[in-house]
Length: 251
Ligand code: IPE
Ligand code: IPE
Ligand code: MG
Image (cartoon, rainbow, N blue to C red; front, side):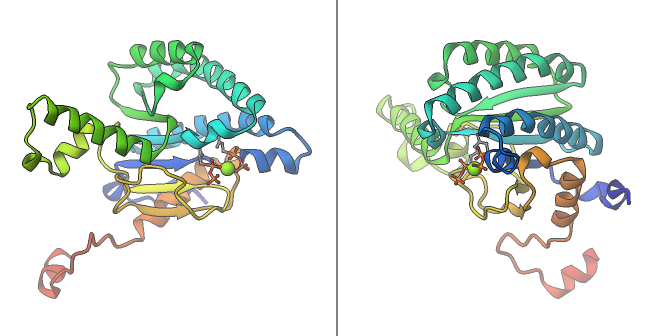
């Protein structure tokens, strides 16, 4: 069955966020070290980016490394960072050719220098693209982001360039790492875990959630398309109630 045929072009999510989970368990099931799972997760990212570009999703945001992930064994963190540098270097030319812009959110200053340099090169190289915006969340956690935003706003108040009474959702949004981006319409989390693990907590107030038991290294375009189809079956109400008359008119 060609799943793509079942996707309604006029109801596409503008922004899909993904929690790529289950790499370690995928590797353990194969009697391998956890890092083997991370290595095999790269193909899943490639396939997801291609799948999104093909149907016209405009924003993809991948949770690649959380603030809390720094507490993993030193060897896993080191190898993950190296893998990241390698993947960015390998993928950037193709991303660039396909009109993909790479962005990063999170506490990038906490990344090892070699990672930051590679990342900055890739961000610069793809800065002029706009077909698809791929954002990688690195050393990211929503609580870090929100407290960081509060600090930025407090500084403006201290400098008297902002009045406390003018703080509203727009002001807060623009102090977040995701300033200028639309909120995710759909979140996909792999590996069967049913939680958000400190990802985009502010932005996901009304995001539709899709959980799949598939481990991230096995995630492919068909799973991505299944998630979109699931999303398109949902009724998004945003807390509102549609009057029967309006509903009939819109039908
Ligand atoms: C996701 O897979 C990748 C990162 C968090 C970096 P995990 O490494 O969390 O794998 P599991 O969840 O332990 O199987
Ligand atoms: C969330 O996965 C973070 C990333 C995918 C980068 P984790 O594996 O770190 O989350 P928990 O520990 O299961 O909540
Ligand atoms: Mg995990």
